[in-house]
Image 1: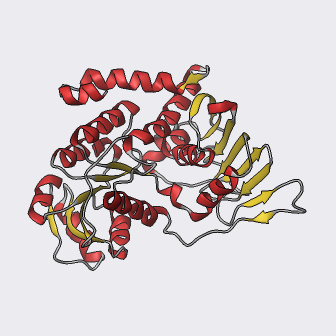
Image 2: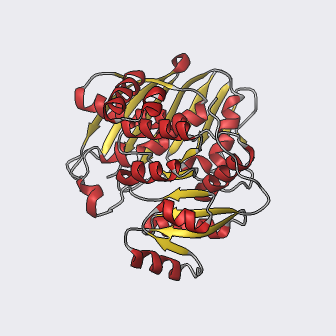
Image 3: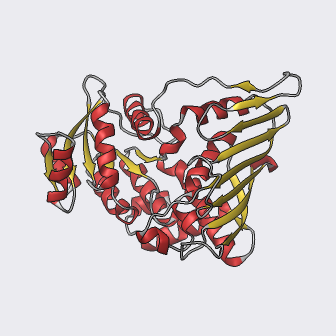
Length: 360
């Protein structure tokens, strides 16, 4: 099991946030609302953007700068929250980890599985936690669904239907594989969590309806085989006006001793043949989305207990996306292990540090 340095629990965790754009502002609100952490630094290449974000959040006395390591040294920070664009994650995470700072990084870990693999190895070499913020795992209803599914015996099929019609404008409407690359990782990661199993392979088809306002394929259907032979089916569209699902999708689980369903918003419902009707699952009041991700990061650093979203574990969620894209492009079934193996080879080709190469 990977070990990492812990932080004492006698005071709030001192955080430096990197990235002050739109998502950065959401994280500023999240950090400010958590009494277990304290924002001591904000990093952005544009210092005016950083100043404006702090002013809008009503924060003062926060160090700003362009380097995570330098701001962390100046503030005696304990950890970094990386809210930059995915292309910058490797650079920022490497700088922080090599400076002896654990990192909570926005998803996806990197644009490719290879880059994410390098980051995981750097974290392990440094003995620091690199956790990926798969924030949609932290819906209390999803966690209740996992709990109920565990009591239903062997899983046969899990299905997610995702139908939305957002008009984002900008880069998303020009992206290739837009649904798979920009959104599907949430559902893929949640499937691993709910099933408590790992994906083996995938066959995926993409297509773009004639009315789509996206350049790339806005629709995709993917069938994953999981350990033990269970199947996970993802059927999604980003150009489906009318009768839209939740942003979490609509879920159905079929297992040996019954079934469960979740509309993505309310409480899951469990159906057993002898129960006389559906039973509504109980949901706790645990923090959700970004707040849940931050709370899990703090708990990990206080206790030394690795979270399910540690960088090495998260590689398989990202590999599901890459494998689905590869299958859609080639028309053949793709093994997840083949994607991970290729990523390791690609990572070795660009890594010079011998300690990191040994971990790859």
